[in-house]
Image 1 (cartoon, helix red, strand yellow):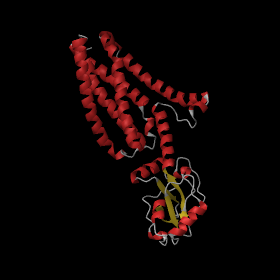
Image 2 (tube, helix red, strand yellow):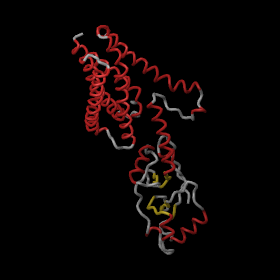
Image 3 (tube, one colour):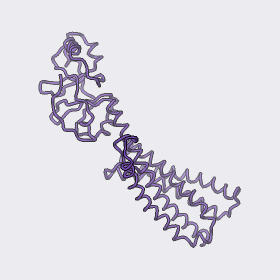
Image 4 (cartoon, helix red, strand yellow):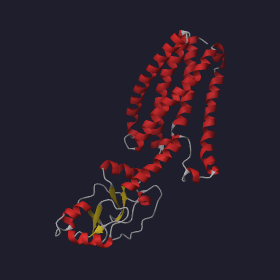
Amino acid sequence: MKNMNIVPVVPETVGAIMSREMLMFSPLMRAREALARLRQVGVPEDFMSNCYVVDEQGLLLGVFTLRELVMAPDHKRLDQFMAVPRAILSPDDDQEQAVALMERVDCVELPVVDDAGQLVGTVTADDALEVLREEATEDMERMAAILPSEQPYLQTRIWDIYKNRVVWLLLLMVSAAFTGAIITHYETALAAQVVLTAFIPMLMDTGGNCGSQSSVTVIRGLSLGEIRYSDWLRVAWKEIQVGALCGLTLAAVNLLRLTLLNHLDFIVAMVVSLTLVVTVIVSKLLGCFLPIAASRIHLDPAVMASPLITTIADAISLVVYFRIATVLLGI
């Protein structure tokens, strides 16, 4: 039996990836008759395990596996051992949400029905893997500040690669100008304590690394449905605690290194160490909150990834650094 319903193909939806070749049987058909029909028509190339029971109008009634069919008594009707599907998809459902549902119900194949309840296709584990591969590639590109490309790298034109990369590079370059403006603003403080300049790269790198750690963790949680917008307060509180522990550890090691090994003035070492604590906590918060905020306004959370978070964290860490230096060193 083949379903002839025409479903419009909308990109990024279940309708675009579903298979339209299904094994469908009448509920009054007996097991031996179903097996005979299988031998007659064969199975689709992407067949997993499910056979579907539909009425004369194509409405989905139930599902059974090939194993259940083989093990059933010859005289038993299909409606006597069919089961209710664990979940049902719609052609308009988002691909990522469909894959998440398949994982949640632990099923390698789910039926797709239209608004009238007619079976129009199936989504299999193979389809889900393809979606996951594409989404993972897209997220990696966004996290590297590259606009996603539809073609493999070697088949993509140089001009297209240029366009995919230069937009983000321009935005990040302009935003990084604020970092330079902050350093210029505190030029007097740097002139009074030139040694402060030596620790700017370390502070900025630490902030960027901390923000990246949090953002990758949160983006993954959002993609898998483990984190929702309503969880933002819990996520923020957890990152504050983690940031405090990490910041205090880094600050303690840094304080000992600067005072015992580098023989740096204790007050200067305290300025750097205190800035580390604040920088780590702020970067962790940025790394968790920006992706959650992006998902709230229906943007890809991966957009708020490493480069953007690093740029913002750099600016904040410099302001904190110079403010603490101004207070403790009196400059």
